Length: 616
Image (tube, rainbow, N blue to C red; front, side, top):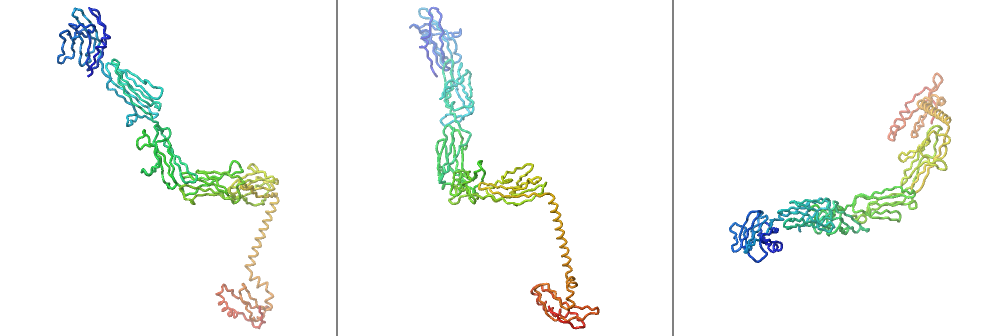
């Protein structure tokens, strides 16, 4: 319990009135439970004989002089020898205006007024700030961009003043909000780092002027929503790779750590530092296909397991790179493009032709070559190297350049008033040639219109001439061009009149008719060959009594035996003996043929008269 004795103060401020004069009022404050002394006569050295204390018109206590009042058990109020009123354990009911009447030994009187104000507090002062994260040292942390609420409360008697104050690095130091109530709220929306500092809640008793202050330090952390950023740089000789992890725009500075993605052992941690950017260098022999390296970014505002991270997975593909080509805007140049995706880190690509080599560490490499750098049969090759590939195991793709060679019929014939189509085929060139049709010695390019139709069907480039006339007769050129050379196929078109066409049709019909008749006659002659030969063509032979051997093959052996002359018939005609021999179908039939020949010789028709023998 505190004791408030304000005698000295009252002696300076108290104005006494003697012999019935009025008295000035003096204010005095005391907290609940304190001991307070209300002075009465303090002007001279005389001791009042009687002192009476009156509160709000009612006598409280009298005493003084040689018989001061004594505080009995349970009584808190006493009058001392000098007339002062002593109150122990001030209670709210002790508050009020007191009047002191003192009678001096000379019968003079003295009056004094004292206004006693009873106060309490500030008590139960508390603050609340959120949403925030508390650090081990008690500092609060808010995230940038969030809305932070501030609350302060306390209790004082008879009244109080609440104030939120800020002290920081910015120029906005001072009072933020104030009220005379029992609590005070305010908030900061979209809080920024400039709002970090010390926030204080002041609770002041407006009567006793006693003040209680409660302060809290607030930090504003800015943690980006984005993850840490991982980049890599491969050495030109593919001996090592540099890995960089960065996480900028963070407060306070984060802790970055490079580690193996599948192991948290210390020997698999390649670097750890409190920084915004961490760079490590790894030898190629420490890497393997499918291995994952990750960068972990730790921050006080992030809960465990919520770290921001980025990672690399080292991989190389079994497939070869992809080679492509394209015509450049400059017609004298050709672009070659090499791409090898699905590998990490990027490979080192080479474009090689002749003694030239252009290389770069990238997933896509393009070179432009002009006509002077290209030749027939030349090979343009893309070679892909990777730090995960052993030397000699590089992947590649290539082009072999070939000139165009258009093919087609060099002569064409058309009939007037009809349509004719000239066809040109080009499949040999690389890069594929651009094929066009041109007319005349001046080689005017032909475009599709009412007279000409140029169409492309696969490798065939066709020129259709509508309603051909004599003016269309002449030379046409199928022109194929690629970056190597220009090659032309010359086609001469002859245009004939429609009457000549009629004669050709009639001639064709007659020729066809002759062929058919010849075929029919030959067929009839062949089917009646035995009758023609025996009955008509060989009549004279029969009269001489000759023997005819019918031989169908060069392999048949001719027998030279005597044949008797048959006697003449009654009509004067002779009969000729004819021997027919069988042709062997194969070598194994020779024996059968020999066996049957004697029998065939016996199978003769004999006449009455002997005949001369004739041998063939």
